[in-house]
Image (cartoon, rainbow, N blue to C red; front, side, top):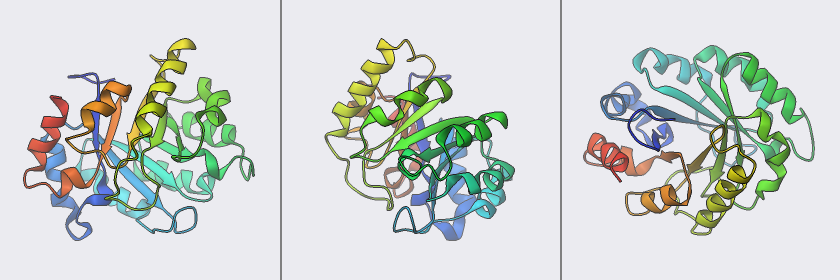
Length: 227
């Protein structure tokens, strides 16, 4: 999973200065960070509107980080081609946008992502039980556990998420899938609670304002790796 540690830090671009994205990427590139988390919001599934594939494509030449696209959108299937073309390395979508409506069945979304040689993840909101994604476990690479309500950066970590992470970790181990499926945690992660998140079973920590609002982003990222 990770060349240096047993967890990955994924800076979340949502917390960056959008007027200066090229320079905002530099500390991420120069740190131990390996992933860059890209939150795509459509103002329908969530109340916020972030950025689209054109922005992802424009920053792709300026970073060798693993581009992790998180689709917080009402119809993820329609957006897949544009983000694949923009340079995504992984794409996750919310199970709440497909179950129980099945505008596009999850397997169609998963297959489209995987056949383009990208990693595929399924995201779940804080109140969504993990059981709704269990039938797709053999097809995906990671689970995104939202530790805040999706839509806006800078929210406080929901403490009950720790128990949810631990439960998912335990279930994956019971199914002998722990080496195949990573647990990503997204929202409210800070230096003071990151170790608890890791100890609960998280492999990938999405960190936004704690990095981009820091006086020394490189130091903050590297400190999270040394927890």
